Length: 184
Image (cartoon, rainbow, N blue to C red; front, side):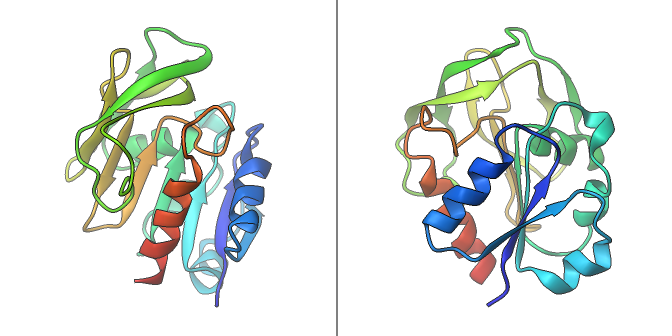
């Protein structure tokens, strides 16, 4: 079975995403964000766009959104999905990295198995201000209106928070859900 690719956008938690998938016995490989899209298209069954320090350092990631492969964006990956597909990103009201309580508006496939409310850890220095056309807002919080979004038709999803860190409740569930989406 082909692996899920974790795209390294130079974020401090990309290795934790890789490790969590490996610990869940999901075939995974980390790749640089400069990898040729044709190599991505032929080499994996799903893509996780990892976090990172700057939207200016996302390499070929916008090209990966056009491959027809399921995509999950985490933090910066969530923001680059929004910006690349016509949404709006900008500075967060609260900034920084820390805990936030989110409310799930629509579980969809990606948030299946989660409660309506949960505590997660996220950076809100930058965030999605408006989801792209065709995307549904899946979760909100008191400080961010687009904590999670998704296009079920395109099988592209984004989360502002980091499920891979221990402070996020049941973070492994989102990766299990994404793995299931990648097998459909």
